[in-house]
Image (cartoon, rainbow, N blue to C red; front, side, top):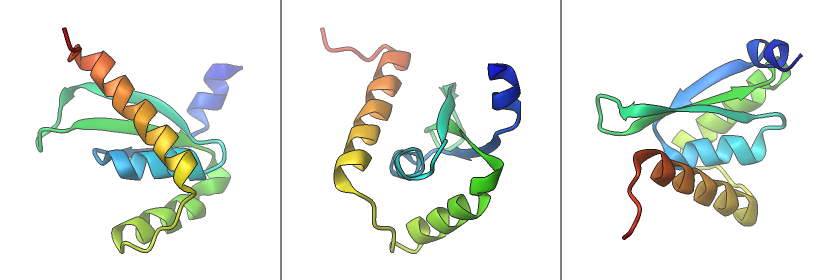
Length: 98
């Protein structure tokens, strides 16, 4: 059942942590599918987010507002999601303080 849900999700890829945090905190049903283990061409790691088919327009609107610097999101939800993504990136790269 879970595999069927994952395959029915639309995928969005980005290297921007703030955009990924915005999507994950604001789009109902959005989930983090994976973070690429290796950096992409620009030196940042690719973040893949899945979201339900019925949220395509919401994702397009959010991305457009983000790029035009007009996106407004609840600060607590955004910061919590952003910090979780940063923690995940640190865990995956092994950049732990000794």
